Length: 320
Ligand SMILES: [Zn+2]
Ligand SMILES: [Zn+2]
Image 1: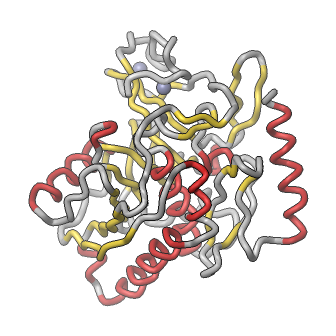
Image 2: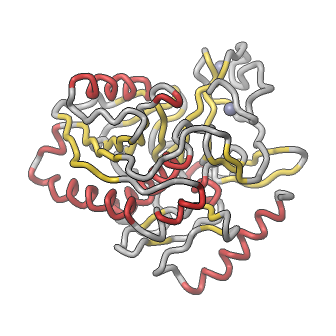
């Protein structure tokens, strides 16, 4: 997608002033160390989490701050995840072949399966016409990524792995979770590096044609876990969000969005710690049927009521 509702009228880069021919749209979960960004839209404003569909101007590559679109939940007609679609996890680097990381890989594999098959969490997305997928065995890529990676390099690498048969060829009917080893930083632009500015993201190599992928840097030490200090919980919070947002907005900005936000971004504004029935921490998605953010079965009871009220108040404040 070159243009969405939020960027259709932007003709010059807000950073360098260069003429803009279009935008790359990427679904990004911002680090909380850079929070409280005010988005103005139609004369009103609301404090966002900073997470959302980020806009990178072409050809200069700068991230553009853009006016928020309508705060109503909306489907823009792009591809959605259907029942029976496939996930494959890709662990990139020899780090993941070491005996000491095998238990980590096993826990992450279990978490992917548990998140994707949780009836309440993943199953609830049926209200968005999104189904549950299956999870096939992971792949470990036995070459190590460079210490600094761009998203274009990730696209190139994924395309290469598919053509070489190092990962399964999922076409448009699935997606990859790409896990990076410790010490590897991903940059979405010269100014946007993982852990400093964002936690994780999802994207597509070629818009609606895919392949589709999430990128999970090794858990950041701060800004990406508001519930515990356990790196595994940091990972599942980001992973669950990217899984949900990839499924409901496979080509970022063309699926289900709320203005410039995807379904979990919206709930990060009034963040509540949640776990699925198997115990993993997950980020909530906006439940349009209930007009509230998703709550786990073991949710914090004292917070449930205030969350409902908060979600309701945010909607009212934005004039929806
Ligand atoms: Zn746009
Ligand atoms: Zn620029």
